[in-house]
Structure formats: structure tokens, C-alpha cells
Image (tube, rainbow, N blue to C red):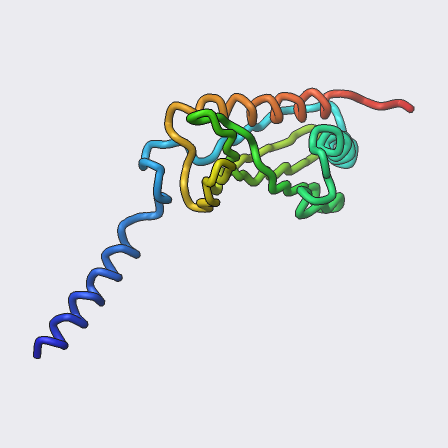
Length: 159
């Protein structure tokens, strides 16, 4: 009877942990885990897509390694990359996914945070958030990327 009670307790503990919610460890329910930008352009879907691809190729050291999906017909580019932030004298990185979707004269960029990693003996924690005090810095960096993409998609290249 004692072993049944132990098994039942373990089973209930597993269920409670899995049903506790979808907020990842290190995040509070009110923490911003994603951000979306929608804007208008004067360009066709293909021009927006091409301009975004050129911009992405210019800002990432190895664009081919961060671009996970590029489909000009669907008007989609998916990038998985990392953004640096500093804590206790060490540089850490927050992993994120950027999804850019294009329609004629309209574009949407979505960032989703997915974890942290870094140096100084700090191991990868794919389900944890940066410290709260670093979140504005992280989002400022990602806002800069979104702003650069928006600017790139406003330019008509007649070359």
C-alpha cells in the first residue's frame, strides 16, 4: 500500500508540474516574451522580401547559418539568432526567432525569445529568460533590427 501511495504522489506531482502553465522558467506571466511589428510599405511582396533578405545578410555575420526558412512565394523569412547582453561582467546571449511575413504593401515582423546562454562557465539554458533588468537592453537591440528592416523595406531599388 505504501508503494502505491508513493507512485500516486509522484504521478500527481508530474501532472501538477506539467499543468502549471505555459510560462517558461525565469519568466513571469507578465514578462514580454514576444513582440510584433506591422507596417505599411509602397512595395510589392517580392520587393519587400528581397530588401529584407539583403538587410538580414548585411547585419548577421553568417546569414546562411541564421536563416532557417526563406520562401519568396509565401513571403516568409525565419531567422534564428542570438542577441548579446551583459550581466556581472559576462556577455550572455538571448536566443530569439524572428519571423518576417510580407504582403503587397504590408509587412509583419515577430520576435520570440527562446532562452539564454553565455560565457564564463555559464551553460546554455534554452528555457530561461535574461534577468529583468536586462530585458530593456535586449528589446532595444531587437527593436533596432525591426527598425532597420522597416527602413530597408521602404526603399525602392531602381538599379
